[in-house]
Length: 463
Image (cartoon, rainbow, N blue to C red; front, side, top):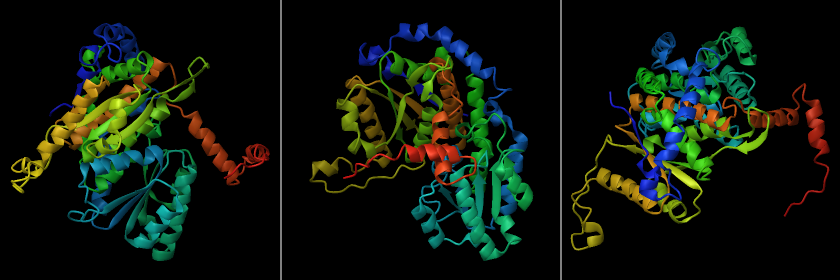
């Protein structure tokens, strides 16, 4: 199987100059700290970082495959009810490994997939108006079982199902992915008799894409989940190497750290030159932002750290963002996702031979133009002294995507060691959840509601 490759040439001073580029000496100086960071992360794989072993959960994979086979042909739609880490991975895998027109014309007996990752009433209400719950399997995903957004969606669709197919039959239309023992959703599963899958301990939401959280919906729509985990396992083996310049996850973490901390470039842009890979940018944005964006370090000191992730899509955003990237502030660095072999070429016919502005395209292929656009952006960034690296996919398949997912997860975990922050908590997210619970009148949050109301007594300033 082919490896994905990390080309970091254009992050170095050799390519973009010493003011914005990294020196070989700076990378070499990070070798020992990087090796310690890797050792620290890998030492936790059998303790609290169980996501590191997800690629080897063969029994879980077999169970998912058996369930997917048992419901094949029974449902026209699969709907994922989840948010954040319970949704972004599902969307990224679906867009990467299914046809972009899958939902318009699903192959064989495969269902359409919808990921309702918001409680915007227009999003949910429009789905209800356009589709039949009786033809739908709902995959409810929440490790805690207390996520307000997911549980509100669940009770809406559960009620619709009961009205449409009856209390007894509705059970077959719901599958739940949650904690093995704890939480409200596990209690509901036991009470109602829903089929369920487990989010293992030591697997946080943003690190859960290779668990049933991401693999179940993928299997239901025909994605090769064995290829995904085999790719992840291959990357895991590559990343056991403590040598900085031989370990892609370690090297990527080092580049990010140095470009942010030493070169003061706080914005990390993932520029996907593949429509299939575009939603990996959203998935990575959560992984990076929630893991590294922290107020306090491990010593409890206020540090307010974290790179800001941005997503861009080639060639679309060459016509919306690249002007800023090439000539704007020197506060960004770029990761291009590039695919060597596309699934389609698409020939360009000869046309308008007397008009050079069109004629030169005739006889070429669309894939040539796409690659030229990608290379043009890389050249423009490099000539403008903007640090950029490229992650090269041999092709977009389950094996290469699995490699990428594991590489990014491990890289971010290592990055947490460089920043000396806890990469696996999310106190800022929890603060917002608690405020929402209080505003919605959940028991136990009365004092927080009183604090919010007391702080809102000033005169509003609204134009």
